[in-house]
Length: 204
Length: 204
DNA sequence: CACCTGTTTTTTGTAAACAATAAAACATAA
DNA sequence: TTATGTTTTATTGTTTACAAAAAACAGGTG
Image (cartoon, rainbow over all chains, first blue to last red; front, side):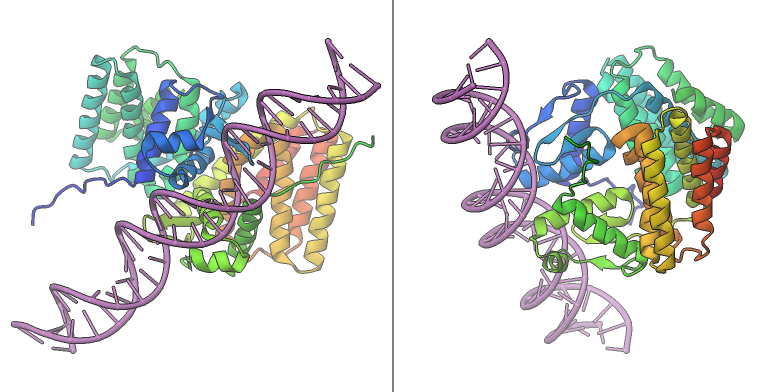
C-alpha cells in the first residue's frame, strides 16, 4: 500500500469551532457580541447540544466569555499588560519548540513548511486576510505540534487566538511572509539561535 | 448595611468539576482511567448533559484527554521536558502577578491570605493532603485573581492542575506552609524582589 | 491456533421536549 | 417622574429519547 499523508478528519464540533473562530478573528463577530444558542443551531443546521459544546470550548480558549444563565459573548480586547504577558508566554513556548526541534526536522517537514509559506503568499495576493491569519497560525502550529504534540498545542493555542483578537487588522505588509521565511531558512540551516531570534521577532 | 464578603455560589457543573479534580489529584482516579458518562451521571444524580460539559471543561484544563466517539480518560503524567516548560510558564505568570500587586494589596487582603495559611496548616495537621493541595492552590489563586481577574486565572489554572498530576504524593513536609509564609511576609513588607524570589522557590 | 468477519452490545453523539432562570415590558404607587 | 413590584417573554440549563459509532464477542476459515 502506498504511504499516504493522513487526511485530517474534523468532527462536526471542530468544524463549527473553526468557523466561529474565523468569524471572530475576521471581525464579523465583534467584541461583546452576544451569541444566541438557538440562532447558531439554526445557522449550522444542528441542535443546541453540539453548539453548547463549542461555546464551552471557545470560552476555555478565551475567545468567548460566559456567565451562568446569561449566555456567552465575544470577549473584549486584552488589557495591554496582560497582552504583554501573553506575548512573553507564547515566545517562551515557541522558543522551547525550536529548541526541541533542533535535530529532528526532516526534509519532508521542510517541504511541508515551504508549502505553507506558498499558501501564505497566495492568501496575501488574494487579499484574504482571514486566510492569511489561519495559514500564519498553521505554520507555527506545525512546529509546535512537531515539538510537543497535542499536549503542547493545547497550551499554546489559546494564546495565539487570544492575541489575534487584539490584532484585528493585520498589517497588510507582506513582511509576514518574510518573517516566516527567515524562521524556515534558519531552521533549514540548523542555526537554532538565528531561528529563535526570528521567532521572537515574529511574535509581537 | 454591613459590608459582607460575597459568598461564592458555585454552579452545579462547577461543583462536579471540583469533585472530579479532587478525585484526580488525590489519585482516586489514576491516569488512564476511563470515565464513563453514564456512571458519572448516576453518581452525581444528573443526566449525561451536564456531565459532558464538565468532561469537556476538564479536557481543556488538561486533566482529561478525550477522543472523538471514544470518551475521556484521565491524562497521563507530563513528559519531563514539558513539565519544565510549564514550571517556567507558571513562574512567569505568578511573577507578573506579584509585580502587578506591588502597591494594591490592602489590609483585608493580607488578612484573607493569613486565613488561607491557617487553613493550610490545619489541613496539614489533619493529614488531609487533598485539602492541602486545594488550599495551596487557593493561596496562589487569590493573588492571581487580584492581579488579573478571571482572565488571568483562566490562563494560569490549567498549568497548576496539570502540574499537580505529576506531584501525586505531596512531600508531606510542612515546608509548604513555610514557603507560603515567606511569600506573604515579603508582600506585607512591600519587598517585591523578596516576594518574587519566594514565589520562584515555591513553584517547582 | 491465529486470523478474519459479521453480529451483538455498549458507549458516545445528536435531537427534541421540558424546567428554571434572567431579562424586558408593563403597571402601580409614592 | 421615579422607583418598585408584577407579569410576560426569551434564553439558558436539564432531562429524555434516539442515532451512530466503537468495542466486545462469537463463529467460521485458512
